[in-house]
Length: 108
Image (cartoon, rainbow, N blue to C red; front, side, top):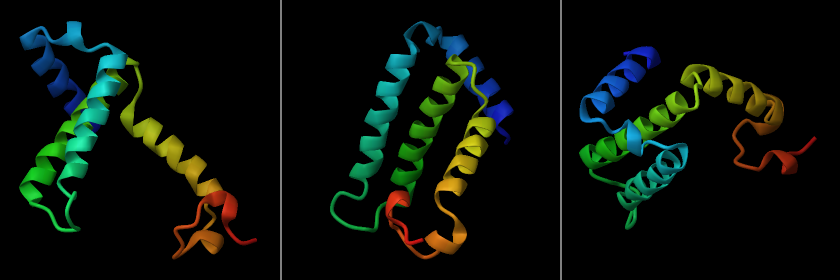
């Protein structure tokens, strides 16, 4: 399923329930953080987690991300690809490969 069909499915689901009235950008951003915390909770006591619980929480994070992008008139694929280009410039392969170092601390 591509982003456009995800957006359409989310619009229809929300519209059927008249939930758009609750989907202000601020409320959606808050919901992303709340769901991200629930995702993190899956890993609270170790590296392994129940994959079904992780799947559900990740779906919630992505759903609210898609709803926020839609509310702001942003194309999810485009903003991710644009950000990837910015990140690619910050982390040149020859300097960043195999490192977790922040871009401003990479060796020359």
